[in-house]
Image 1 (cartoon, helix red, strand yellow):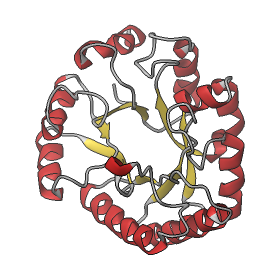
Image 2: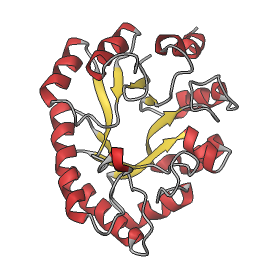
Image 3: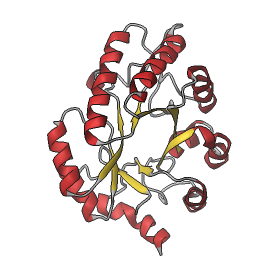
Image 4: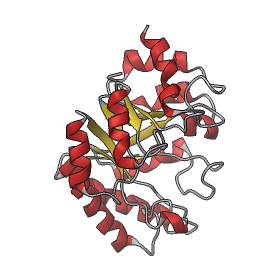
Length: 254
């Protein structure tokens, strides 16, 4: 279980957020990740991490107003100041919770200026987070799940990383999204592995746990075991009860 980080925003949703830490420990996890912890106090999250002997490895920057349709604001030309404030909030949570990686969502944006603003904002975020030893991550997200999302292609992401040109701004490789966007996700992972600093998994097409869809996760996990040293984020929606969605892990550990 050491290499897996269960995502507390998508798994164990049968119980309130702060109770999910205990669930993760009871299921044998040492690592967790989450999307947006900002509705909960740092002190309450710290307490859950400490009591359950867990390390949080990833969180997202504040995404704007999620309920009103925001999916990040980093590429929005009209929200640069708001973005900079979100960077400070993300740093505050990450440093207090000993989280080393922060995913920066681009947003749903239709503007000719979006690319330049996104690059400039990533440079700002990377420079600020470097002061605290933090890594900024960007992740292509497929247009089926998030229509209009600005960063929706792996090659586009690689080009943007090249333009930003900061050592702590890296790629978050979600096998589910890459498979839906391009297909051939394992082959593409091998191509872009040097730029990857975090991996997440879910099966296609339902975004449930490995073994519920079309992807050969036995092959993918075997390759990651031999080549990737970080945690693998379980950012999937369980097809049934959360506790029963880890059977594929038990099979792999035999």
